[in-house]
Length: 140
View (cartoon, rainbow, N blue to C red):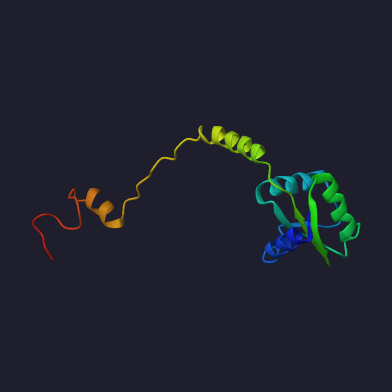
């Protein structure tokens, strides 16, 4: 990756918020799989490292993440790691097909109409047998 490409990616990552955090557990298998899925969709990620509780330095964690995920480390500043990996189009298409198959079986929810107060009063018989507030002959 050239320095110009790296500078472009740093500029794109500037407004992003970190969506993952590395704490006392370090890099667990679950964390790595979640970051892997996010990289497939977003390509560019920011990860926050809690400096007080993390088992390793941010640079060591970034290098380990880059090796495991086959991703480029764009920059490490303080406790923030920026990672980039080009999205695999075939993988995304396969995932979308699987989602479409699972969503095709969804059942539509029933529509329930809630009657308003006046409608309920008008349609339900009162104690005297009439429908509505007033009987036909009475007007107040």
